[in-house]
Each structure stands twice: as C-alpha cells, then as structure tokens.
Image 1: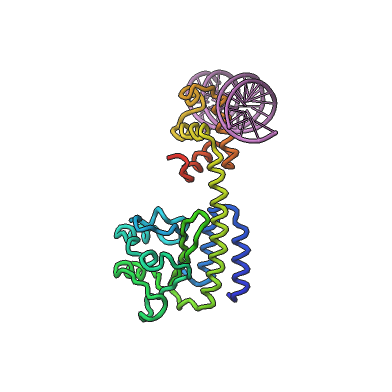
Image 2: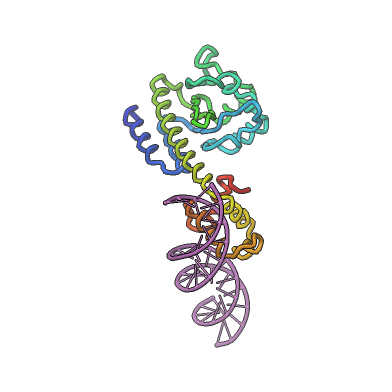
Amino acid sequence: MIAAPRQALLSTEISAVTHRSQCLAVIKNIVNAFGLSHGTLFVAPTPADVHAAPLVLESTLPIEFIQEYDRHQMVRHCPMITKFADSIRPHTWDLMASSHDGDDLEWLPLTRDLMLRFGLIVGVFFVFNAQDHRKYYMRFEGDRPPISRGELNELNMIAMELFDRYNSLLRAEMSTINALSARELEVLRWTAQGKTSVEIGSILTLSDHTINAYMNTAMKKLDCVNRTQLVAKAIRLKLIQ
DNA sequence: AAGCTCTGAGAAGCTCCCGG
DNA sequence: CCGGGAGCTTCTCAGAGCTT
C-alpha cells in the first residue's frame, strides 16, 4: 500500500477506537499493512521483572512464544532494557543482517533461536513515556525485507497515535475505577463470591434493597448491563480478585 | 450543593417443581 | 416434553438522612 493512504487509513481506524479491547484489531491491521506478522504493546520491564506475560497489554504473538520466552526468563536479558532503557528513538533489528547494520541488538542465542523459530526476523520497537511516568514499549516484527527509513517514520507516527489513544482510554478507565466507593467495591466482592443480595445484606447488616442500589450504581459507573458483566469487568480491571 | 449511604416498592426475568 | 404456578433474584425508580 502507498504510504500516505495507508497512514490515513490506519489513523482513521485509531481515532475510531472507543475501547481498549479494540486496539488489538488495529495492531493486527498495522501489522498487515506493513507486511509484518506480529505487534505487541507492553509495559516496559524493570530489572526486577522476571516474566513478560504480566507486562503484555495487547499482543498478536502466539501464547507459545510468550510461554517459552518466560520459561527461560528472557525478559531479564532483553536488550531493550539492558541497552536502550532510556532511549526514546525507535530501534530496529534484523537477525539476518551483518553486525554493523541496524542497532546491533545483543539477543541471547536462546532468544535469537526462539525469534527465528517464530519468524520474527525483522522488527522495530518504540518507547513511549506515559503521563503516569511509566514507560511503555510497542514492537512490530515479522519475516520481511528490512524496514526502510521512510516506513520506520510512518510506523513511528502510527504507533505514537495508537499509544496516545490507548493511554487516554486507560486514563478514562482508571478514573471510572476510582469513582467506585468503598461500599460499592465491598458489595462487588461478595457478589463475585456468588452471594445473593439477601445474603450480602445479611453479612453487611443492610437490606437487600441497599445492596441492589450499590450494585446498580456500580453497574452504571462501569457501564455494565447486569451484574454478570459487572463482576467480569471488575475482575478484568483487577478491582477484585 | 454534591456525594455517599441507606431504604422501600414494584415490575420483570429466571429457575424449579409438578401435573397432564 | 410442555405449560402453569410459586418463589427467588435482578433491576428500576423514588426518596431521606448524613457528611464534606
């Protein structure tokens, strides 16, 4: 696809995203548009992190890749944190290129083998600093000819746009979470334990009507249509265990 | 004033049991 | 198996008292 229409098309898709869950579909489209195989958005690992799975926010990578990556704790030797943690410019790699090309990332032989096996020959990763002072990475990879300078700039713009969108949706979600009162969270926890309104009312020495009112407010705040969806969403947002 | 906590009533939906 | 009834659960709407 020609650069300008491709960027415009993806840009339109990103601006149409209204929920974080829709970001994965956009990542897939970006990957396809650039002839790549996979895209991942994740929280930047710290030296204390051992596994990558909990850091992944959205990814098209096969679960087997992440499992094997974590089995050998490869995140601890990830060149992105060992070498480019404080860098903000995009970094590319090409496992088939000679050592003086690209950024010359120092992959562990084990990591390199794994990436070769999953066809992650060529790739790029971008570093983003969020307003919460946390660092996020977005990486795109696949088996194709090296990414040109022009494509890299284009991909950088699109990735930045997607991250901004994701980040603003995340902030909106967090403000909703904070809006739940302590009482609403308490009722939500008991509901997740399978208790009915009457049972919760008896536990908290309140009437079942009161419990229903809390659930109702919580449903409105989290934009849910019933308590099943509410509990599922609360678990997904880690409001309750 | 706004938000939180608490209560009540009633409609609607769902599940279970029972008889045909 | 199917339909009807009973009981339980969920949801909606309305309102009051208290605190910040």
